[in-house]
Amino acid sequence: MKLLEFVDYLLDPDKLAGFYRELGLFPELVDEYGVAIYMVGATIELDADIRLLSFRETRGRTEVKLDGVDYLYVLEVDLARDLLSDSEAGIVTKLDQANRIIQYALYDA
Image (cartoon, rainbow, N blue to C red; front, top):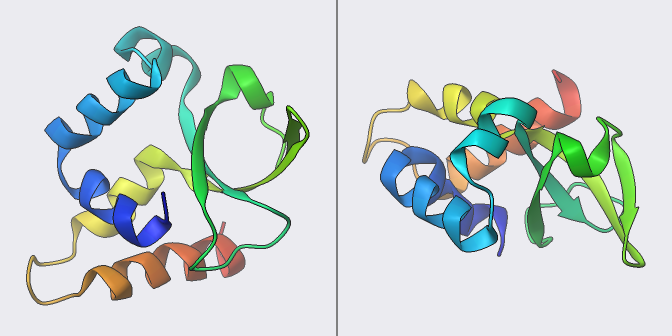
């Protein structure tokens, strides 16, 4: 999944909860350990694939290698949701929202 596609999940708590269930990330795991967005690869780019990883998997590291795949920390899911929560629906595009997350991850996180 790309970050641009994931924006829909960030803006819809029910959709996000369903996605967590699909990934086997159950509420107690999410609440206890937290979940972060990681880019697949070594750079933060709009068109890179993402993966959600729990703190339990990453131990808070910004760069992680799991099963031979490199991941780079972008942002905690809750922080990304907060970042987008002040966006008014329909006024800001999904592309703008995805870019906002990337800009925050690169320059403010």
